[in-house]
Structures are given as C-alpha cells and as structure tokens.
Image (tube, rainbow, N blue to C red):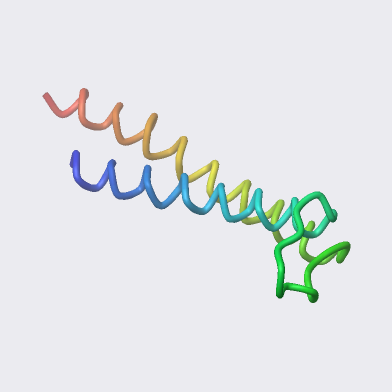
Length: 74
C-alpha cells in the first residue's frame, strides 16, 4: 500500500504542477521561448485549472485516504 501511496502522491504533485504551469502560461504570466500558441489563451487557463484541481484531488487522496486505509487495516 505504501508504494501505491507514493506513486499517487508523485503523480498528483506532477499533475498539479503541470496545471499551474498551463494556467500561468494561459494568463501570460509565464512565457517560454518557442511556445507562441499558448500565451493569453483562455482555453489553456481553463484546462490548466481543471488539471490542477484533478492533481490536487489525487495528491490529497493519496496522502489522506490511503493513509487512513493503511491505519485501519492494522
């Protein structure tokens, strides 16, 4: 159970970071060279918000719910 918890924690954190990067890029706060299709596009802000929320849910679920199941099994 510990390995699954770690896997979901890492996946959730990375998904959250990608979502935040998309929001920053979509709002124009972050500009990377060679990526002219994303800046100031509201679709990336919306998609990034959804991805960040999903990543946060996975991260919290891994840290909180899987920990509770592990303790109740003993």
